[in-house]
Amino acid sequence: MQIEPKKKHPLIADSTRQFIQEGRKQKDYSLWDFVHGYVYARWPYLYIGIGKGDHPLAKKVLPVINFFIRIFGKKSDETGPRSHSLTENSHTMADGYHGKALPLETAKQLVMVNEPIHVEDLEKVIPYTKARSIILKNPDHIVVLDCPCRKHKAGHCEPMDVCMIVGEPFASFIVDHQPETSRWIDREEAIEILEAENARGHVQHAFFKDAMLGRFYAICNCCECCCGAMNAHRNGVPMLSSSGYLAQVDQDLCIGCQECHDYCQFGALYLNNVEGTSVDAAKCMGCGVCISKCATEAISLYLAPEKGIPLEIENLVAEAVAQANVQ
Image (cartoon, rainbow, N blue to C red):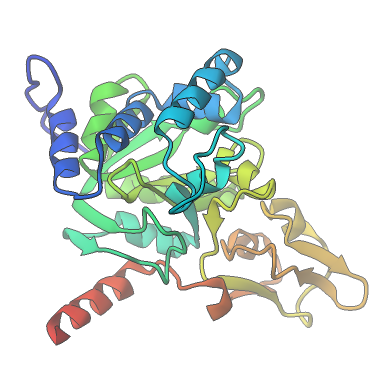
């Protein structure tokens, strides 16, 4: 994808100024939110590497981060005390920085959007109090970035260029500040990356962050061995939400080969000696990776209202338009 390079301001890049302008439009977007978002997007490898503990500087920098959390951290509730460590602050962090699992076809929808989209307050779709809007400006502006979670992980998965930043001002910001590890791609290549990662057994997640203007900004292709969010989720920090689907197994077709077990990133599949492969509904995130790994086509997804509402962008936009017309 060819994007005309933007002229840069003598002091800051145009994409940074656009980021600032977008933030000013939001009443609850503070200076601290901007600084947080700027640091996160400007130095993603440092930010995420330290957050995961993989970066060489993690032990030295974490005490400094804890200091700023004590000084500037938001209260955990209306009257409660401020959080005093990253561990104590982890659930608040998850609320403002989280992902939603996506079946492959749903992820494809997000990179095939043809027009700007503005859908806010998706509390039924994204079960968090913050960062749950989808506001896509220039949705065809897609950048692929070398995965920050894999960057400092010993023996990390390949390939590296699997994190997709979608829309503005995020896409241009990443290219401006990470020119050596990012590049513009078109929708066709985005689909190719999604399909290749799905074939490897990796899970697509739509990521949201409060400091990234409180909205969706990226699709990551995640593996349990490298992904910080998946590791946090496994350790009790609720950083991920279900796709809204659950896997189900047709026992008449299942031959008990357990091939699908090896690819389930959430450990939701197990062998039932009576019936064959079964699904642990509490662990299943409805990503659908297991479906393509079943030689007998015994696995499918079904809508599970108790797991949430799917992030089907076409349906969400149609609902938003219908509500606007009623009002």
